[in-house]
Amino acid sequence: MSAAEETAGGEAEPWVEVTPDAARRLLVAAVEAFAERGYHATTTRDIAGRAGMSPAALYIHYKTKEELLHRISRIGHEKALEILRTATRREGSAADRLADAVSSFVRWHAGRRTTARVVQYELDALGPEARAEIVALRRQCDAEVRGVIEEGVASGEFDVLDVWATTLAVLSLCIDVARWFNIEGPRTPDEVGARYADLVLRMVGAGARSPRAQR
Amino acid sequence: MSAAEETAGGEAEPWVEVTPDAARRLLVAAVEAFAERGYHATTTRDIAGRAGMSPAALYIHYKTKEELLHRISRIGHEKALEILRTATRREGSAADRLADAVSSFVRWHAGRRTTARVVQYELDALGPEARAEIVALRRQCDAEVRGVIEEGVASGEFDVLDVWATTLAVLSLCIDVARWFNIEGPRTPDEVGARYADLVLRMVGAGARSPRAQR
DNA sequence: CCCGAAGCTGAGCGGGCGCTTAGTCTCCCC
DNA sequence: GGGGAGACTAAGCGCCCGCTCAGCTTCGGG
Image (cartoon, rainbow over all chains, first blue to last red; front, top):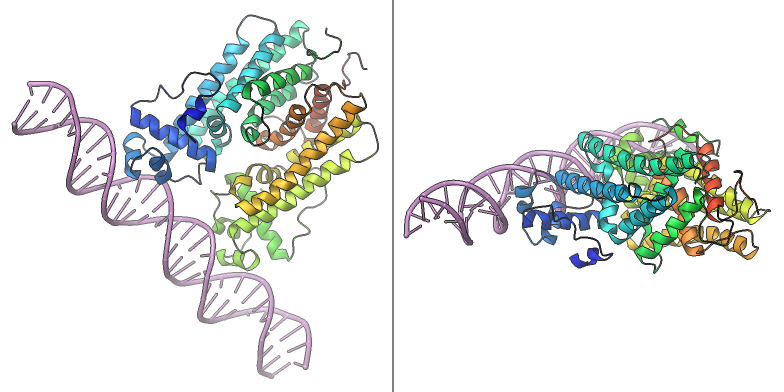
């Protein structure tokens, strides 16, 4: 429940772009509360309390409770998109880049589960305009994954029946990690990321390191 | 938005076990409302209104709003478990049974998306005792999938590095369908089920109907 | 033909919600 | 060292929530 929990995974300390300090504390408190109980079950009094402030303090830094969710959602989606782009746009084969994208995306969903839960599952709580903005970011995430898959198919590396379904399946695997991680087993985010990258390579017909014919 | 929408897919009309009629209408209304807005954002007035009754009528058939969610969750999980068991316990190879389990489970999540959304994503809104009961049902679902995978590994049909991770991945694929279906593309539940079964067979190293070496 | 049980409604209670406002405290600049 | 801007709080407003209850209607059995 401490703030340090989220640092696991070795990634950069997040939310540094949120200033001033009080606004960041409120936002981090909101992420924790939304992830635990959901947006609608979280009260502004709870958020302020977690941040060590009075309920009214929230409204100095944010116009509404929804603006908090909007800010969290946008920053989170931008981070997710950055993770995917870093992997898909580097040097290497399509298989390497897809495996990198999946393992780092899964690592993020597992290691920063509270943020990922809010980002992936509380979208419907936003109003129409805010939701439209976030949905656009999400489509860019989808496009990154679909792009690598299409490149692998074009180069002959991958053997895929249906790019649309395969893209959705890959994203489903990664996103769903935020739902179950830390509930079931004792794997680390790195371990889950590696396993899932392996499974995805199998899905696209790019073999894996198991003892089977390897292209 | 009509009640008939949910009948698509050719499965038996659900909720017939809920009697009397007024109790069923309220429960169906609650499923729709919970799926659209989430449990906490749904009011008892909204549920009663959708069922064409006054707010007070709800409390003749259900003690609390939470009991409605509990009932929906239990019936839904029992249906999910039945679907998985029907597939995994029939005659046939492990590959056939796993493919059948995935395609029928996906078909349910897609065709009965409103129910599946409530069942899969509103679990945290239940109190501790009710949640414990539902979690037990969910573990039985997991065990069915893990069982077929283990059988396929034991018989040499499957080539799996990590049964635990693969089981979770298969379930993630199916469950996440309830999140995105009907938002993105124009596929039918049957089509998505078939595609996903194919992808799962690839994940377990049981090949698929693509032009590659077939064991 | 009356009666009690069952199903349902209109009105409303207590409470907690998101959010506001008036006022206090703390600085920093001059 | 006086003053004003910004950060924050205590108190509370108005609203709507989950839920209750007294009373009305309907209907099958004696």
